[in-house]
Image (cartoon, one colour):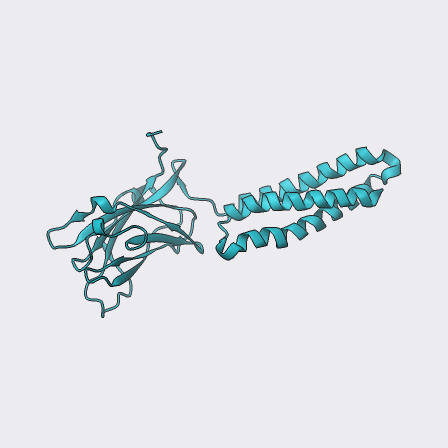
Length: 241
């Protein structure tokens, strides 16, 4: 009956791999483009869970002297408990090693920013987010869309527009980039990219607004560029619920 114990534990290993794998791939912000995350969980972690369940249960049965020494049901329960403990331990280690969102004073952080669009742009309140005026933060190989307050954009004396946005900080990456695009008055689209000189773990000084910065490597063929300033702020719980 040892083979049945290993079979049951192998099936349990597959189920644990799917359940914990779905959670961990979310923690690691794995892309699900074209179902990639789901395929990885099912077809990579699933067989690994099967193999792990069979191997761990076989070692357990061998160490405890086989079915004849303890009885089937007791040994099956012990083997399942060992498989569960190994799976939870491995998942716990993977979770601890993951790059979690940075915190300041114990609170998760967001990036508040303002974009100064040139006077050649279409007014932000006439641009549809996210199809026309949009921005997103790229960090650690993943991207997070931003909320833009188009309706309350400020029209400056020089003809430019200032629109505010906010996006969550998800990692300790030192290679953060804010990018996006917007419509010009003539209907053409213009993109922008800013490499943020922001530490992986922001400090209290980063709560202050940065100076206005221009795009790095701005294309001289584009007459007027976008400018950006930013700060970090705590992600406070909503009070309107």
